[in-house]
Image 1: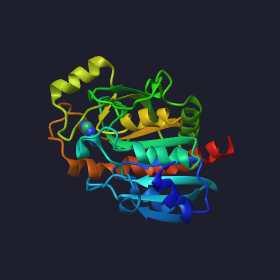
Image 2: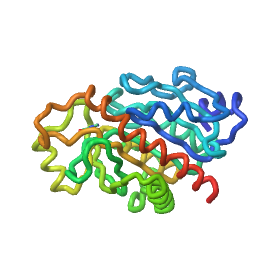
Image 3: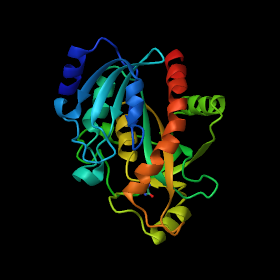
Length: 266
Ligand code: HPA
């Protein structure tokens, strides 16, 4: 149990079964939550102060498609706090309140020409290239988390079905976690390609590890906001990421209620 879970439980009737973490451009999905109770992160002990301009910094607990959800509009990043475990309390709180799964979303740079900016990529596996881990310092043997099936097959199936129903193309691939906050160099992207990455980004992987640590099933989706460094003539910028994020987000927001509904029924 976390102190934040007590705060949330005291003010909510809905019992959530699935958590969501909304990345850049997806914050508006929090407005789709019905029977919503809102908690600014500043009111929740252990939640990160959100410093990224495209992130709202509030937790919304309620229902989507009749299923209890807790939706984080905005996350903490390693590059903001220098702490890979910055999302530990929020993920632990999802588990404490009864969630059995979490859906993670992010904005990412794409390495595949056939998946241009504006498209979605279902993350099927990841490469932790950040040299750190949110479980550093965890004293129990639970720290040796197995990640050979980190991304849940059932949830991936729900995403494929939902994307097909909405006629939204859904690429699949490997997400590689870079520390940030500077973007990658072209040489780093060439290395990432050789190592097997299809997209690169600065979040999500620590949350996947924490979610598996706390026993939650995981699904994760990237909205591709740009070609990765060196693949186009433009210099990368957060402004461009923010400008492009809504394109993919619009597609993802059509898919998510179907996925949540299917998970709630399953
Ligand atoms: N690199 C890392 N993170 C990102 C990118 C990128 O190109 N685009 C959006 N987030």
